[in-house]
Amino acid sequence: MAERKIRITAGSVQAEAKLDGSKTAHAIWDALPLTAKAETWGDEIYFAIPVHLKEETPKEVVELGDLGYWPPGNAFCIFFGPTPTSHGQEIRPASPVNVFGRIVGDPKVFKKVRTGTTVSIERA
Image 1: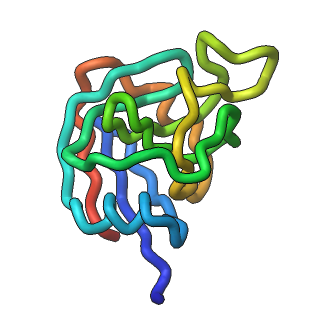
Image 2 (image 1 turned 45 degrees about the vertical axis):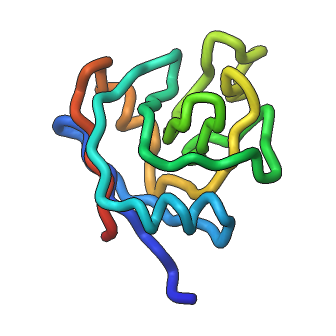
């Protein structure tokens, strides 16, 4: 399968990401384009999307720049630093997420995004 890239735009911030081959990535790719209002939680942006999935190899700790799907909230998550539940510099979601892709380049650009910012995700 061809590599799948998405473009994430949040206010003045824009980044590309690569999706992996997981079922979660396939379901989100099929739902694009998406638009939502950002919520922030520490150095994480998240927002509910119209995709309903179960846990798929869920991770309790993620890497800088990971994209995660949070099953309890049907949420698309962008991780760019520690969250309120992190210990030290680890990046810990509220509860386990399905990691389905990664930001290309510096994910810390998302530090500028505030709650309520419109986020759009499209195929790149």
